[in-house]
Image 1 (cartoon, each protein chain N blue to C red):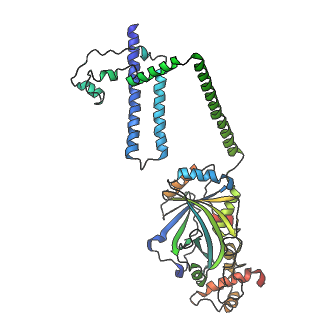
Image 2: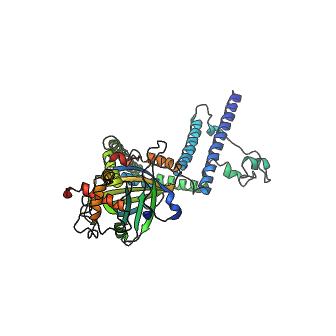
Image 3: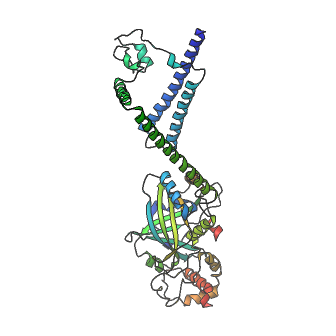
Length: 208
Length: 269
């Protein structure tokens, strides 16, 4: 993705060059328990964090004709918590030597006025969904197992409908650019979840 | 004949000593790791250590069961000389654990009978066994046998169940569905399958009644729409319809938004 317009570049100092390394997969509802059980064994010794988030994806059509995307998330379990704004760059999937999908990632927290600010800036909401699930950690690795639901009535997160009979499983690491060794760790971790879940490097463009 | 047996005994004791030394070494390093590196120790390496120890115990067992190994049971050790003085050679051999071969420790180290307390308990038990009649004993044996066979049955059966369950899981029931994976990844990636909707609340200022996003461009469509967005005529027309846009926005962004929704919106046609 082209550099975003200057007006929306976040001023976060050094955190701008963080890359997200990502592997994705899914697990059927009936096998969820086995997966959670295995994750509890493999991950750091802690209770997994439960979450229920409402994600709103905002779109700004840039000068080059490429849309510029921002993801705003809020917690449904802790409404007073700050919103979370995330920019994800275009995934670099072409490089075969890389074992995981790599993309630029900028995270900032935001106040509750975020939707209005984005609206004023010319962003428009493209779609929204609710993700409910659990978060596991192993060192720097994050494993998110979540159920995605579509929002039937815009803005009403009470009225949702599951997207599929599976849970989305994502294994991700945030690391500075160029630290490709993390993807090897991710691969070996993903190997331990087989055959329950196959975590893969999936190019979203392939699915468009 | 006797000489050959002696040689055999010596060789077997020697190999036993080296095996035990190996076992001791791996136990020592394992204990060291547990005590000093427990923070970094990973579960797989703990399992490796256990496997090593269990393998070494197995080889020792095999060695003892080997036909060529003479029966140690028939060998008798007699203390020939006891001395209260420190014996450096002995201390070295035993790694400073047994520095003297004295009257005090010999009974402990060369003991072939159980400890006195154990002997006492055993005596007590045999006295009790002698007291109850053979009939009662028979009954107790029967009860115990029954209990044991019941327990064995319970232990064996669930194993079958479990085996069949896991194999069924492996063969018949896949735990994931690649189509679902694709659908979910597409949904988080660019909102495929999620309803496109207008933002909640009142419509954006300056666009009364105009459903900006209800059928607005999806991410996918925008790429196409963006390319056509540079057509000057369309852009200009759209600009006039948008008096309420913030002044700071670059004009061509507005153009794109409008041209996209204008060209893709089914109701505007």
